[in-house]
Image (cartoon, rainbow, N blue to C red):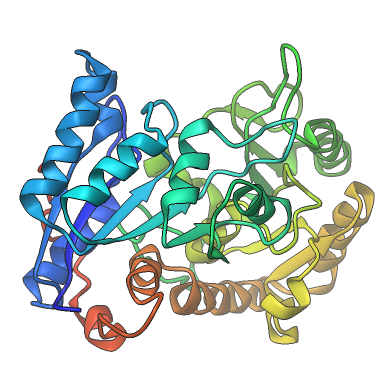
Length: 362
């Protein structure tokens, strides 16, 4: 294959933009590591009005005119794309389709969207955030090659700030999570999360900082802006979470990489496959529990048995671990290299510049 010409179809609507992906492609282009990139924000165009089918046909025309050799798509819900649209794209030129689905989907309670099913069936490779039901969802719908890709943190939104010995921690535990109260059926394990928070409130009281919609009682502080999440996480010694989809192998929410990148010890639900992902050395900054009570006990034990200096050092090790394994820009390179090395990872890492201008084309 010649050098990569990439058409990126992001998951964007309203005022939100995939800043990290856009910046990464800009960095790769500026460094000469890819030939060219074009961005077509289909969901954004549809959400802004007009005939949705006209926008879908415009996407097909962009493929025809730009002639990419790689098309990368993300989370296509609400776009209305069907297999016929993918077939029409294929007829315009030859390209590899990479589909990235970072939202979790169970089989019945929260099933894959029609768009994701079509994209998975049409794709050369699919990446999803779990290795059990999440992956099987795509295989049942005809996906040929389904691979695991974890949640990662965005260096653009989570700017690196090293943990200093003077770091002030006003709380023992911080949680950044919404309270899911379903009108009909909620996300899996929603009751477990509520019970976990209740146990944290009972155990830690005003030593708990609880951010997110729907919470009341000790520690409840309301929602926190995404730009301020790192500051919120670093206000406490340990960040904590109870996952939805608690039975999905190798799954963790973005709370884990975001918290580690902030320099925090992180406590969360244990999942099958973690022994492969997290070596014993990570026990200094990762706490896993198979029950809400057990996880709360483990959090309290760490707070009791470690010194502030030891916790700060654990935070520094957490940052190093996340920077090495869970950067979004590095993950994009892995997607592009799914068959073989087409973008040099070392040169790409040297090209990362979170202050560069992101690509703004739509």
